[in-house]
Length: 75
Image (cartoon, rainbow, N blue to C red; front, side, top):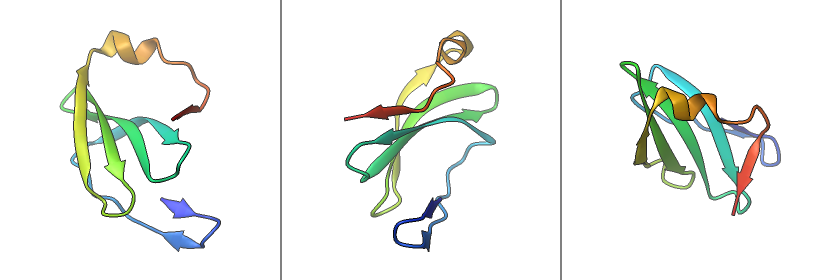
């Protein structure tokens, strides 16, 4: 991940073969993403300060198809 404002690059290690979608929070302190692992999908968050990620929920492939192609920002 690259922060253009501060010119900082961060590498976050997560155990997924693919990141399907990234959701930005308006405070800029964390992101959420959907990761794919062994054909399973999980909704996760990453704390941008300490790099720790947490699994929020497991998702079905049908849930992924229903997401819009637009970027999503949450508060």
